[in-house]
Length: 460
Ligand code: BES
Ligand code: MN
Ligand code: MN
Image (tube, rainbow, N blue to C red; front, side, top):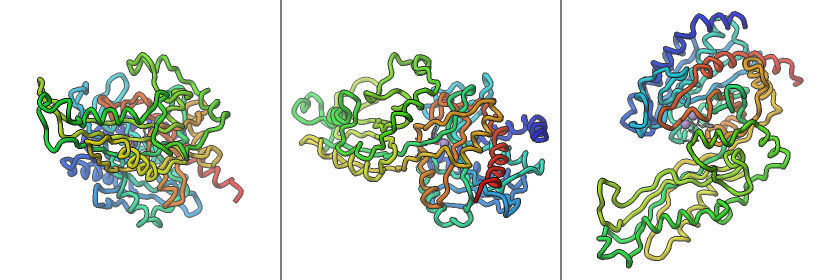
C-alpha cells in the first residue's frame, strides 16, 4: 500500500481538478431543461472509465436519464465488488442563498463548495480515483463493476427496470456505496440503516374560483386554512403521527440497541447552535438520534396556495397544495403507508372542500448487518486509515434502490460514506471536505484488500 500512498500524493491535485470539472456540469435530474447537461455528466464519467482502461464501458439510455456502466475483471477466483452511486444532483434553489455559484466550484476553508460536491459526485469520484490508483499499481484485489445512475434524486425508477433486465451482468458479491455520512472526521462511522419513504402531494379545493375575501370570507371554506388544520391534526401533542395504523408495523428496537445508539458521541447543544434553534422538537419519549433514525416521521416539504406576490391581495383562494414526505423504518411498507395516509387524509376533510392525494416515489427502509464479511472489511479499512474503529450508526436519509438491490439482485450493500451531516447536501452552499475526499480515496483500496482476504479465508 506504500505504492498507492505515493501514487495518491503525486496525483492528488489532478484528482481534485478532474472532480471540479465534473462538478461544473449542472446534472440536475429533476429539471428537463438540464437533460443535455445530465447527459454530459454521464459522458464525462464514461470517458474517465475509458481512460482508466476499464472494460465494457457503456452508457445505457433509459426512459429518463442514462446509466453509466463499466467493469474490470482480474480473476474468476476473487470476489466482485459492484460500486453504485449517482451523478445527478438536486436543484440548487434558492440560488441567492449560495455564497458562490453552485456550478462554479471553489475551495474555501479546505472544503469544495458546489452542488453535488458531497451528494454524490464527490463521493463517486473517490471510487474512480481509488480504482485508478489500484489499476495503475497493479494491485486490484477484486473484480469491479461500476453502475452510476442519473436519477437517484428523482426516485431511481428506471434503475429498477435496468437491474431486472441486466441481472446477470450485475452479478456480484457485494455492493459498495458512498452516499451517506459519518459522525465526524474524528469519529468515523458506518451507516447500518436507511429510512424508507412515502412521498405524497395533496390538493384541497374549496370554491370553484378565487373569491373576494371580504364578500365571501366567513361563509365559505378557505382551502388554505383547511389544509393547515388538516396537516396540524396529523400529529398530536406528543408529536405522534395520528394516521390510524401508521405505527402498526414499526419494529421496536431493543433497549440494548437504543442504549448503544445513544452512547454514540452526540452534542445536542452544538447541534442546536449549528442549526440556529433554541430547542429540538420531536416525538416524545425518544432522543434526537432516535428520532432521526429508528422512528418514522411526517414532514411538509412545501405548501402553497392563494396570493404570495408582493403587497396584499384580498383573496379567498380556490385551491391549496402541499408536498408531504413520510420517512419510514423497518418494517413499514411504503405502499401501505401511502394508502393509509390517503384514506385518512380524505376522511378528515370537512364538508365544503374536496381533497386529492397523489403518490410520488417511495422506497423501503433497510438495515445492514454488522457481522458480515463485507461489514468487517469496511470496519477494518476505516480503522486502518482513521486509526479508530468506526461506530455502526443508522442513517435518517433514504436510498430507495438499496432495498431493491437486495430484492432484485439478492445482494447486500455496504454504506461506506465519507460525508458529514453538516455538508449541507440539498441545501445552499453544499460542500465536501478535502480531508473527506482524500480519506475516501485512501480508505477504499483497503476495503478491496481486506474484503478479498476475508473472502479467501472464509470457511465455505
Ligand atoms: N445521499 C442521499 C441520502 C442520504 C443522505 C442518506 C445522507 C443518508 C445520509 C440521497 O441522495 C438522497 O438525497 N435521497 C433522497 C431520497 C430520494 C428518493 C429523493 C432523500 O433521502 O431524501
Ligand atoms: Mn445521494
Ligand atoms: Mn441526495
